[in-house]
Image (cartoon, rainbow, N blue to C red; front, side, top):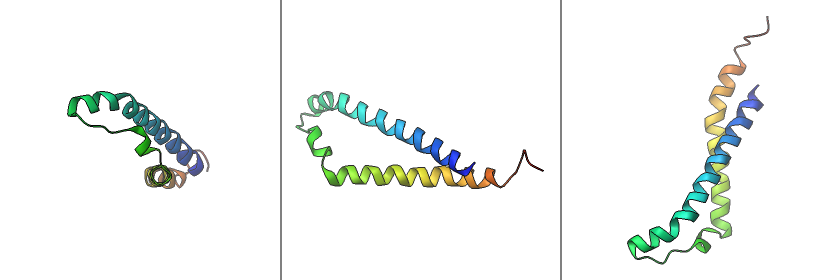
Length: 80
């Protein structure tokens, strides 16, 4: 049951990451126009930033999924 909570948390966090990245890629040109900037997506696609994002995803999964996973895995609701 603990693995199920961790997997569900990873999937939800991964979808949130994909939605956030997609929104930032779509909004970036409008943001540049609005604030008269020249930001590019290439600055976000370097190796260090991608490793950081992966570490954030793993950390969020561990912190958000471990507490309910441990708490509910110890309840034994369906077993005597």
